[in-house]
Image (tube, rainbow, N blue to C red; front, side, top):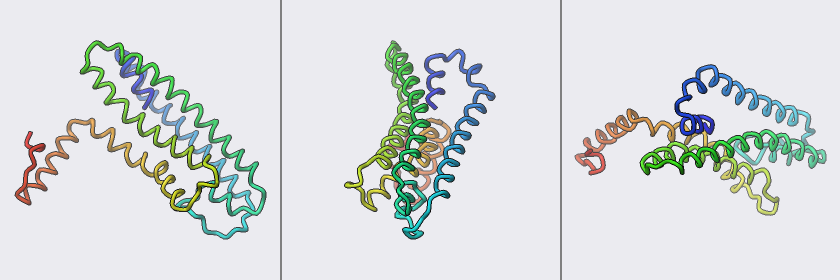
Length: 204
């Protein structure tokens, strides 16, 4: 998404050639491949652990820090290895996103029209918000000190980085679609008409 915004704003005349079906397929394959590789590293690390602390994790999915708590062995170095693998993978994505948005903001701030700047920011800021939410909560979940750890806090943070971003992404990007906005407005207005109530913001 960062690259898509970068091309759309900084190189709009080359959008079709730079982001054709082949380029999109390559980016999707890279994202899926890196995700599968990272999942395999976690899976191999998990199955190599000797577990003696029971079989119930204090989480709604098999999160790595919670699994390490069930391990009989001294898991400090294993945890560091898993974190380093995750940091290396995330750092590459993070640097790419930051460099893309630096170029995007430089191009947007040079736009003479306020309407154009508003349109560009409305296209890019939702993606930046979702990425920031994911990165900040994920780093907090994996790097927070044990002294502030609690079951409820762990579940809340895990929901914020594993459930909210994937759930919000389609909604954020779809709401820019004018046809979807019209369909949502029509569905809401029909619901209110059944109750003989029609709010003013739907009368447009």
